[in-house]
Length: 115
Image 1 (spheres, helix red, strand yellow):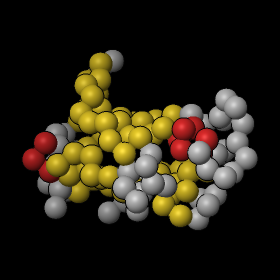
Image 2 (image 1 turned 30 degrees about the vertical axis):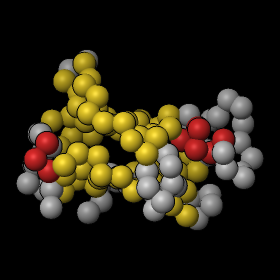
Image 3 (image 1 turned 120 degrees about the horizontal axis):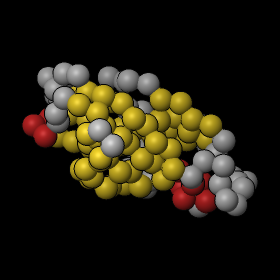
Image 4 (image 1 turned 135 degrees about the vertical axis):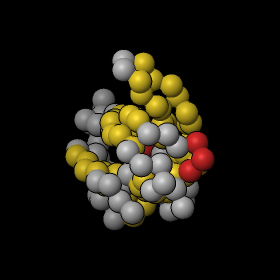
């Protein structure tokens, strides 16, 4: 199964981050074409680009983390320390599955290429 997916884990609460707004764009030089705007499901997951639509090239994911944590029970600043987390990455082989998880708290995040 090829394509592009994500999974957001709320490290502060120890659970998936549900209902987070995510934008995915394809980047070409300084221009970006929006491919999709969606929200994570109850397990914090989202299928962003189907395999047949995935192309070799540069992509950008934007996660509305500030809005997510504003509705949480955690103490956060106003404005939030992290508002939109942006991850720029490249797809080099459309035959493979590309999974870009986000591990996040109100004050930090990490990502990696998952499987």
